[in-house]
Image 1 (tube, one colour):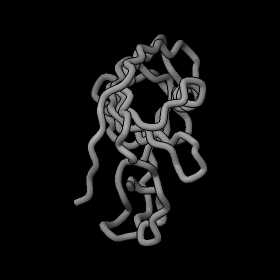
Image 2 (tube, rainbow, N blue to C red):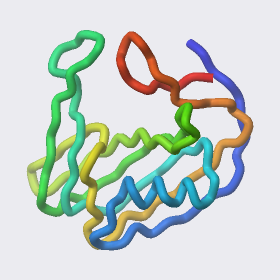
Image 3 (cartoon, rainbow, N blue to C red):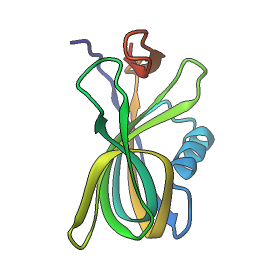
Length: 145
């Protein structure tokens, strides 16, 4: 285990509106507000989304299982935001989304279009030194210090 300590900075309250691209809006806000580390809490609905719902097999590097939907689902999510080595914000967002008996859980990537509204609370983390760095074993950008 590796860890660092930081402290809370600003708290941002965001309304992602109907039709907005969720991940793009959050990335653009992170750039505008110069966020380098944060935790995100989300509640609302998505019209469509693409998510990774686990690996094909329990091996490293993983081969993702993709899942998507294109009709409105209620959702709740939590995520992190850290800069990569190019100083660009990278959002790691896991969510559960459901409609009637259809419930999906995974890491939202690619398409994620808001339906009606997605409310987001961002809590900025200051002084942690956390960054996303390429990991040779997994082939993914992983949390580092």
